[in-house]
Image 1 (spheres, helix red, strand yellow):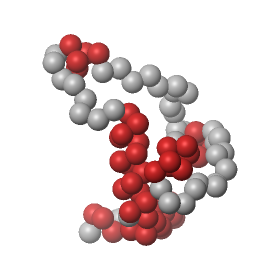
Image 2 (cartoon, rainbow, N blue to C red; image 1 turned 45 degrees about the vertical axis):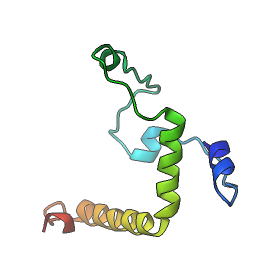
Image 3 (spheres, rainbow, N blue to C red; image 1 turned 60 degrees about the vertical axis):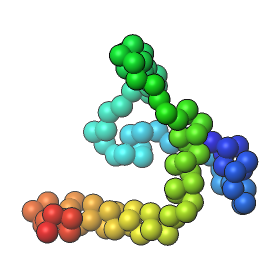
Image 4 (cartoon, rainbow, N blue to C red; image 1 turned 120 degrees about the horizontal axis):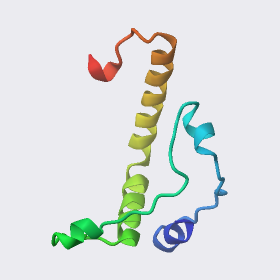
Length: 98
């Protein structure tokens, strides 16, 4: 992904890629498999075909993130704030539910 980013955007990504364990990132109680293998064979058997390949999908996601960086940062901060408030007081309604 870093190479794809560097090929398509003005600035080069110079942040290190750090591998983080899912339990450390998501917290205790999170369960996930270590490796997922997407399989669309049942869908293609029914006649469905993807309209974008994986590389194009990743690139379009990167473009959206780059073009909406400030908005996404604020959104992430507001969710972090809400998560912290919910952890402190589970009976307090979240802003999105008011």
